Image 1 (cartoon, rainbow, N blue to C red):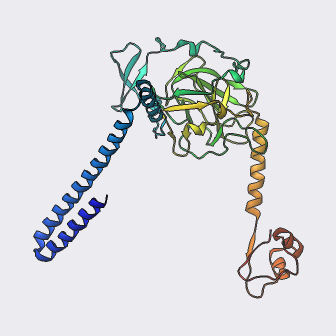
Image 2 (image 1 turned 60 degrees about the vertical axis):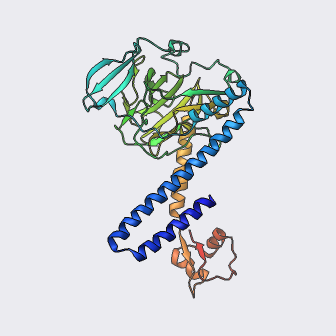
Image 3 (image 1 turned 90 degrees about the vertical axis):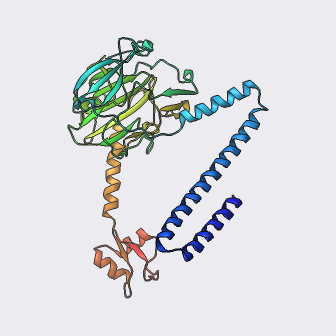
Length: 383
């Protein structure tokens, strides 16, 4: 690095001398040449540093046994698979006309051509890669068919592929901030995330999969769609005003599966969205950045400790409503708060009269006494 800095210093000094001695046109050429030399010097230094790192890794690998080297390679490969990435939503397929279906050369995959000159791989659902995913515990009437699976029987961690070359991703709703997050609040469990919306706005299948549940649920979910995906995950879409898919139907990522609403136990239009594995809920924000609508990674390491310790086989919507009502109350209280910045000549009595309150109330809100000296510039809460 010192040699690089010295080289750049000499080159820059030379460029100053050239600029002083040459005419304007020549100066422009010289500057251009110097920039090229600097770029080349930087590139050469970067190559030397990369070569040094490669040599270090090579020297270390020589002292490893083949088994140790294989372990290192597998760990590096896994870390690369699990690295965070930003995956944008695929196009909404409902608005695209299919103009042709082509053979991909593999019987399990088709190539679909759309009218907007785009294409995508789509699995041939007649040839399932792992049909047991859609057989074991497959129940189109019971929301949670995994009730009898012991929590301790689930693996401590599990690598789950969210995407591959023949699958896609679409945010369940358009990019929007989360209104209510996953997890316990005020001692009440929330098994998913809530996204505010307008009634009738489209809700999308997040990943490709098979619809296990499409029904009106009287337990609080209202119009509910549950999709099981090839990797065993299930996604829940609740409070829909209308369901547009049927049980056992195959859906692709980006397909509109329903319209947003406020059915069931709901205080207003929103999408209640859950991600579950064998009935156990975990935070959907581990997968999706809802504000941008992007998928955070293509491969997900699901750990058993991610499952909520409060997780039950259902969402108690009375808890959710109680939280929403408390949120509204606290918001109203915050908006009702009033403050006064003390100016010269102010007294507690004058401030109380101005805001229609009492000296005692101002003292209580600010933890002061009626005899406290008021400092100019200090802010007092008056309501």
